[in-house]
Image (cartoon, rainbow, N blue to C red; front, side, top):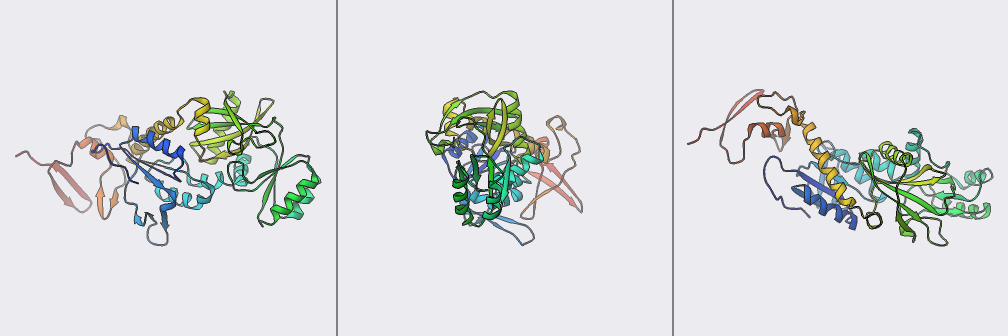
Length: 365
């Protein structure tokens, strides 16, 4: 559904949120409408990408997406990874996006996440990747129990299992082998059934909660019946969460930590975290913080697009930039509109020559 522009003019700020329509996304959309002039709420399932022509094309509900945005917040589950990466690669050159294209691939695959953490020297549980049941069973002889087993993709604790003995681990491996895909084995870190979620926005951990697994359950996820309370992270844990977000390429995300003896270890990153539980327990309006951050970054991105900063916006200032073309027409940079003070109601005279266009406001009658 497309929103209506509340105000017209050259300073209109436009945003889009692309998602699966969760309650969290609806909260963010409502907060975006309070700071942006024009907000479109778009369903990820209604997009398609066309490649192979002179330029890639993005369509929404079967029609070319012609609208220009200053900010696009794209999010969704692992099922839409390839589409999310395609959309953000194509649209990300002309709008601020808090999640870089490559982050969708890395953030929705546990193995690739661990590889990013390894490259950034971020603490994590020891993890093995195996491709066959035979290789996994050989590994079982070398590791301690319990051991965690994971599928590369999955959210809310799905695809995560715990084996207490070699016998139970062997049975689980036989089941995983039927899926004919690599899987992960990971050392179990005892934290009394708790983990900690840090919510990152930009260069700040804006909220955190400690989650405790339900009785008889080792996974602390809320979707698995766990409970949560607000908590305050120490500086070391905050720094690890921020480094993880940067390593993956996300300005907005949740980082899940195991903290033992005040030493944080990263177990997962979530690029589309739910807001309900952490908002409820911390009493922090995270959706509002997201919206305000996106607005500030979108304005910054918009100024960079025309090659100037606010301090450089002075009359007669020569601006070096690239022209933007829409359907064969030239769209002037934001700086040109701001400095000229021209509006859609003004009559202008054009002097055109090869490589040169002069625009002058017409004389009042």
